[in-house]
Image (cartoon, rainbow, N blue to C red; front, side, top):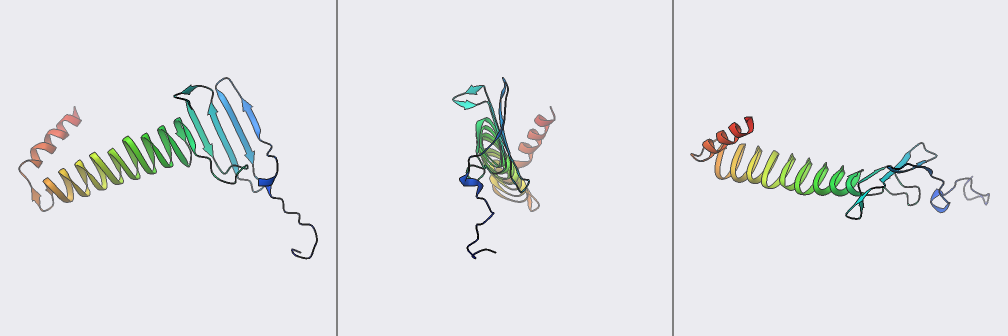
Length: 182
């Protein structure tokens, strides 16, 4: 019974030395820990580095040292939260970012993304946006805002939507489609 003065049998793993299962290879090293609840923590860091970052950093689960998720940071970063040149995660930031929520310096793909070239349900693009709601110099979506817009409901200088077609929008999008077809 708690509070009766008897010593508690519950341990606080965060206060103990962590015994990781470590596997080292020439390519990199894995650290693994299985929580008493069955939750698995895994982390891989490649031996090769570029710009001071591991070529590949992968994380999964909560760290037994902190009880928190580790942010994957690498040239290629993969984890729930990832930061890298190529970042893949639920939350991702990088030059190229793929994630539920992503921010990218070049290309972003995700449910909600912000990037010069953005593709997602909410695609906030500077140059190009493709999504249910999209912005960009060229914006394509159900609801879109931009210079050249192809949408169900669009706002911009040259719009092709259910309300009509501007004389500049139709030839622009037809030429874009023919270029994409090759």
